[in-house]
Length: 231
Image (cartoon, rainbow, N blue to C red; front, side, top):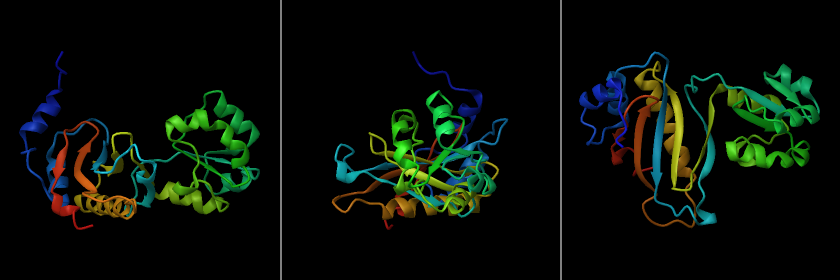
């Protein structure tokens, strides 16, 4: 049964040539002309990689700060024996035993979980709860740290994490529809550069195969290969 598309989506498809590739600046301009939803939609960069997702040494993941922030209010919890420090630094919730119990019972109303090195010895037991949701603290993503204040500041300011899925695709939110074209372009460039630097040393071939730009309720706009092949 064919999927019924909204009038907004159909109108967006008719407003631009979605078969061609655009520069990042052009792609954001095309996106800005699509009909808007009643909320400030998230703008996402979708990247298809040429790596073999079944090979452990070709996993692509990392973090990068967004020059203009994400436009999203980031809810942060911190697993620590010093909750007062974390709360003073801006954490939404902090603690260890009680917070772990709350999470194990189904509390997942947060965007990022940070843990100190010492707390991770216990937090590892929550892997089955947090792992599938992409919320498990990890040193590679900067969410296992003993500098709690700096960790909270980084994620609240708009640091984003990217991680390849089983089909070698990456999706990263780079801002909101209310952002200017220049802000979205800067954020997109930061993400593409970070992904480029995360290229596995063992990989040979075309690393970034395609890039698309879309908002929560819009079709995707293809980004020209000239924007990422030289990275």
